[in-house]
Length: 429
Image (tube, rainbow, N blue to C red):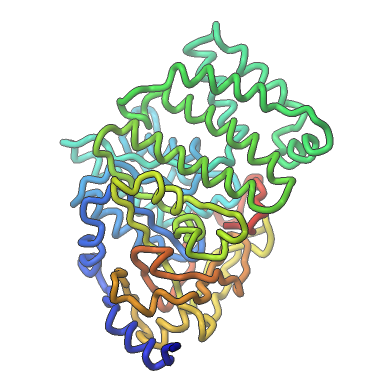
């Protein structure tokens, strides 16, 4: 028999932990225990409270539980520069703000914002204390085809000029498209020729040089191999993009999962990873309508691959506030309203139970209210305030953080420079 709204509110209140400071995250730390993979989401890409609580949890995992690296829904080349900064590598800016200012691909504000800069400064100081291997910061995403191809070419030019042939062939193959990924995708849709053979040869060349152990963020062979993996993944991603449907999404999330696995292996036995990405990537797709659409995601794949190592997923939500987003792909940055959540949604129900407070839920067998399927808000870089994903909350996540009233992040750039690598399915997540 369906539970009444009054019953639901009572169950939520009983299950909630009000959070006001990092120490209030203790129940979540207890749930994480010895898990080696902690995936932390966000219901939007532009909400300050999500970034701050995610950073607070990550700092505790690093300082108290010895986590090895942070892996984010960002480009490998950009994030590698930030990694070198926080790891104290020579020849790079000492202030993470300077590195983040250099992020240029739209949406640069996703990582080039004051909230990430604050966390990166903390991480650099933590690493400077010494006595431990530097904690890394790495990008998982597949978009950086052109930057990654240039990085591979530069690596082979310096370290293996006698084996640069495959890189030169790949550069020549992509050259006619002028670094326009959409042009490449549409041309390969119309004619059978594409650059797949060239990039596969390039990856085979780099895999032979891949680092075994060592510090992956600072080892040039590992970085070059990862850039080659991106070139292969991106070439396939853009070809699939023209088909519509879930295939390009699945290519992207498989790539992110593969990158996370490579990083964990390279950091060595016992390495622990924190992942930052949108709820749509972090929460298990099987607990949403994504599965029926033929989609998988990072959260599902990590649970499947690394269950024995311990995987904990944490989702976020908000009732109302403001957010940084754009009206269309590649558009200008805007501070936009997040209207009050639908009354029948997860966020609406939690607000009714605990209005005006941030609250944490760590799911167990008693979290019966979280078993039902309800709408769960999702806003990407493209603003769609009415976007809700049907979700069985306690199956999608192991824990959920609700920030009742939220505010937009503070981008470093006053506008939004650089080009955009279009993602069309689903929009902007």
